[in-house]
Length: 179
Image (cartoon, rainbow, N blue to C red; front, side, top):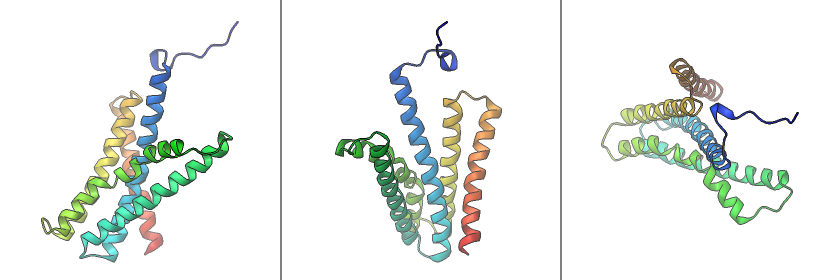
């Protein structure tokens, strides 16, 4: 009797669909991670610079880039060790693009903060809108995960709630520890 792997989710998974799924999962992870980082920076920045949404936006951008660079560096070294090969510039570029969703997650909240800096809305409003956009990204990524995993309504609700709660919990822990 030969051992065969059962097809996943009702059908055989082709190599290209597996590669797309892996890439989608990696971007999803980056967006969720990046969003949680952004939300924590917004909260810390709003406390440190309560009248300067532009300064908060710069903090968010710089922090996102620093975390992106750290991920690219760490994953590059990890790739080199795990594949027993020197890291090529092409592979490093692939890792940088894959981890780019960490920085992309900062864009919606940064736009709101820049609108506050430009005087289109108050500082307080821009911080709240930035925070709301970050939470909206967490909701959207929870929904994306639920769709990819073909979860029903209850499963989707649970994933979205867990995403939001995790984001809020980590932000709350940051506030407790840093203030």
